[in-house]
Image (cartoon, rainbow, N blue to C red; front, side):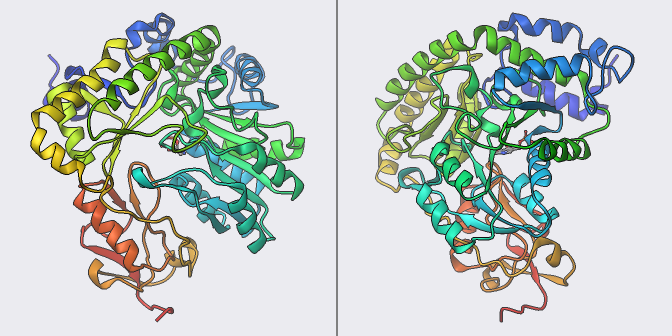
Length: 486
Ligand SMILES: Cc1ncc(COP(=O)(O)O)c(C=O)c1O
């Protein structure tokens, strides 16, 4: 008999599965029983879990089955070369940045990028100059980067070697890459795009163009976020604009940042995701998008509900459902899970984010509108009072951080722990990252301002999950001991 009390991890996963929630979170392969093609993977999970022997090729030096699979992938992604990556887009991001940039070079970086970009910057001691995205006021969300913003920051930092963008964002907001790419080509800048949330774009003409199609030099896409791949599956796309030498260097770092024992079940699941999408993607997205239109129009009938869309951002991934509701997101999340067996991807302020895929059942999609209607009715008085409040708890403006030291320099300086309320003006010595979405509020070496402290207070008031690399206490923060700014 299995002693589950000694299997806390397995017990936890079984408990979650038992809840039978309609899942609108990663990975993209929910309701896998409806995807016939995945049965080959399920039935062979353990027999596919092999190592590099005769006939199974080698991810790091592919010549046989993996090379053939990557050739098919390359054709579908419309790249010069596409590489499987088993360590997520985290490693794909590292590989493209390390392959193309030298230590201490200047890069123009979208401030609302994922922490993996910040980690690469820190490891290479790159000098970041930040591109500030447009804000969507009603949702208090950072969105896309304009050509004007790129030109402004580039003119102030003419030595920059590369531009690093995030498109789409976690919330489905897409930057119009083509004009930025023309600008980068004219000025000898690499354009690297973290497209972790846009792996599905090449599979339907109804979705935005992929960044590679729009002129990026390289992009990383997480297959597991929106496609029916197992978690950690990512693809690194390299464009024909890169020389063989540049691609050689990227391939080198692609090996450096990945396990020497890559998972074959994971690789197989990425191959199957590509195959499935080639066969059925177009038709599946056509019907999914129709269902989403119907769902959104039902949601819009509920008083107090706002839906993010093309009205706010011209280029938008309609499969990302971002709902702004009168109640705090954390409370909505709890009610949806406990009372309606619906689990969204994440909440942030008063926004709820759902990742929708062709594998969602029609009846599950309908449940979202049903549940929200029920919550608004059950709490009618409080709901209508809350509708009068600002749609967002706080309105943190994305701002250019004041950066005094690099992360590496900070790691070699003395630090101390102080109360947050006494930290204004000090230099931060740790990472402070609301997660999700994983966009740093403060990085080591940046000056702590009153505005940032207010934003942090607001996040805590919403019960947001704040990852801190130093202090374990909510009301404290690691700062540099000697404060050269004072
Ligand atoms: C914008 C963005 N880039 C990169 C990543 C990292 O991707 P992965 O989880 O595949 O390593 C994430 C993860 O959430 C992300 O949101």
